[in-house]
Length: 175
Image (cartoon, rainbow, N blue to C red; front, side, top):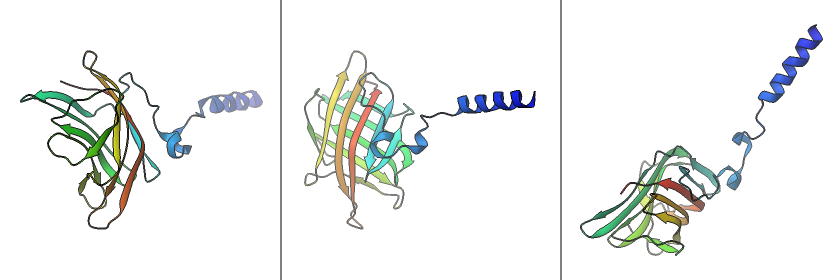
């Protein structure tokens, strides 16, 4: 009888283990897939370390204001030394499958920003650093926006370059 109970306990314990546990993933394997169906995912590598937000609770909008379009998606998650990543535009329309340069947060530009945990500062892309976003799905009927992105940001105080690679998001947006 004791052997039967022990055997049943071992079987239940083995079945309860999840071999897909993400605690053992590394690098790009930790990122959500690059989907285009409004999955509520946001992920990238920050200097090679995964930054993932699967909450779906992003501040994501595409709005027509004073004759111009404004886009923003912001992910808040304290990972890889960052507390947030934002990709946005001021007075710029979105087109599918066209690489768009990330520049300053200024009129008629797309940009990216990060918030660092170590300095409590926010830093943005510039016109002299590499950065690109490509919208792989943008549908104003279903309000789905998906993209892939990568960019570099230099921390002014230290000169450190933060490399954001393999970025992707898939979300619903408000209008």
